[in-house]
Length: 123
Image 1 (tube, rainbow, N blue to C red):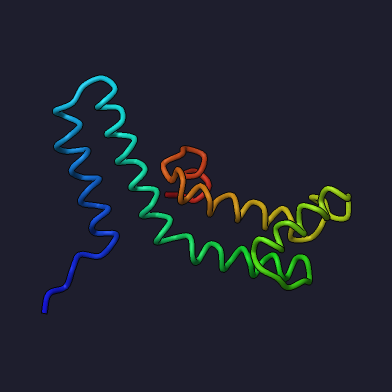
Image 2 (cartoon, rainbow, N blue to C red; image 1 turned 45 degrees about the vertical axis):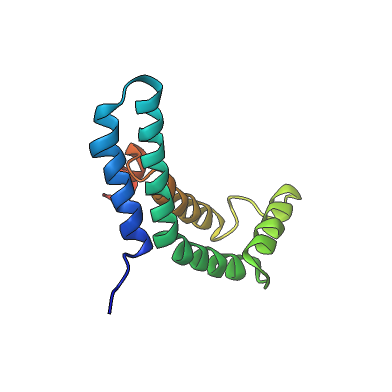
């Protein structure tokens, strides 16, 4: 039985190739674009690994905060409308915590080496 590499293994191998083999042999724009491509693969990997749990947590928080049900997109739209209407604000219990947790989850995917993120999470 042959087990193919996982998606994350393929992403890791491709990003490593770009960083370790391609970039050192390239210069100028080609080197820059190879680094950008490697970083994009890293983001895709983190999306696959982290996004499902982050969205589950966000959805759970929104249902509790808004006392409503619906898809994540629908609840985010409802949250935006209620904030815009002045029905919810930073004084609303749980809102600031929800916004902060959602922001940290997004940064964990997009830019986990960001200094402020690392400071906040202790990573």
